[in-house]
Image (cartoon, rainbow, N blue to C red; front, side):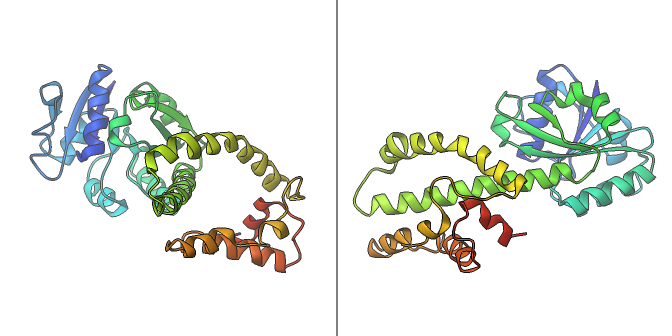
Length: 282
């Protein structure tokens, strides 16, 4: 499949390399010349001189630019008729919907995407890319998109990929935040963070992962009745904050969550399970 990649930062270069490795006829373009100097696949791609040439060269055009405004600017005045535009630039759901309307009006089929990977993961089974928008366009370009990793289609609403992207990043940063707080605690007593992480933290978290599915079921059903530890018990003692302060560690990562749990109890939901806190966020 003839495919163009527009935007050759680290992620864009990884996308182009994955297409070349899968044998796709690949054209590349970047606003700033010279981005391909260190790329190992330079000889295997066609270099487009202009954005117009880049779009004209291929049936499927993959965008990996800085932001929403960059996409609009790069495609301004370019003939998009009969092209499938796959936008892998980070965007909000509202921006994805706006781009879909704008580019469809100009004769293109639009697919929005969210990359759940770092550049070194692209082209490996560990990479997942979320897609939404025109299903017909997604199916038509799927053989090329699978070069990047698992291609997961989430529906016709253009913003669904962006929404799920941000939701997954939210879960990721929540986990990272808990990790750095835990690391700060154990190193106050000279414990090697690697040893703690490998022997205690990771096995503990792995054992808890299945509980997320159970929590999701509670949120979907709206039945938060606690089967094990209810919120009133969990907020009876703010041990994390107390011990953190005693060890000279800031509790600013955990304090907001504890405050939400306590507020839920004060509202009369002390018998609920932890997922009940979601009702304070909606």
